[in-house]
Structure formats: structure tokens, C-alpha cells
Length: 148
Image (cartoon, rainbow, N blue to C red; front, side, top):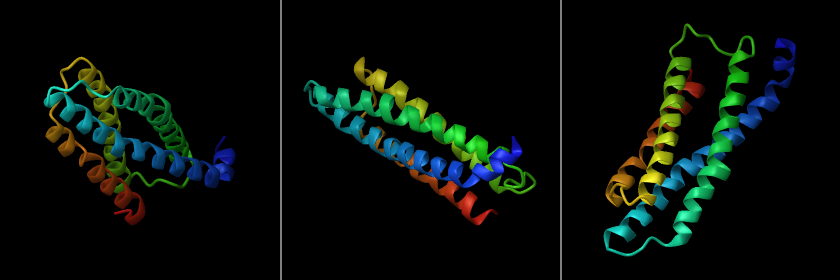
């Protein structure tokens, strides 16, 4: 198994990077859709059905599979011998960032249902939460590239 992982490493890494890019795109865009959805409700208008459809499809068809592939490929990379030195800080800070990103993904899924039920947050709150994936991305990328 370790020989397979070592020889497949560049392919797994490429898959991981592509999946993470797709996942991050969704994590940046879905809260923005929530802002428009919430602000429309705030002024007493029905949410545009296209927002509801876009939110659901983005989460179900792009973000969920991208997160699953990111996790699977990332774990395969971690299991590749000689890649991660667990005595350093960077793998732990990256792991914390990835767990935070996964929590944010799940929080967005809960917020989508809350918006549908008319219990969503304000557009301002969604704007503020939209900054979280950027901060987590900084932690993750600096951890992996700088390897402090």
C-alpha cells in the first residue's frame, strides 16, 4: 500500500489541489448567495427562487463532493510515508484549519435550511462570516508552504 501511495503521490496531490479549489470556491460563494437571499427577505420580498435553487445545487452538487474528495485525497497524502513530520507545528495547524473549514461547511448547510425556514441571519452577519474561509485558507496555505 505504501509503495502505491508513494508512486501515486503526484496524482493524489493534483486531485487534492483541484478538489480544494472547487471546495473553496463554494465556501466563498455560498455565503454571498445567503447575503442576497437574507437581504431580500429583510425588505419583505420573497426570496428569488433562483437563489434557493443555486444555494441547494452549489452545496449538494459541488461543495459536498469537493469536500469529500479533498478529505480523501488529503488523508491519502498524510498516509504517504515521509510526507508529514508530526513533530513540527505545521501539520497540526493545517489540521486545525481543515477542521475549521469543515465546520464552516456544515454551518453553511445548517444556515441554508434556516434561510428556507425564514430563520436565517442578517445579510450583515453572512457578510462577516464570509471572511472566515479566507482566514482559514491563510492558516492552511501558510502551514503547508512555509512548514513552520
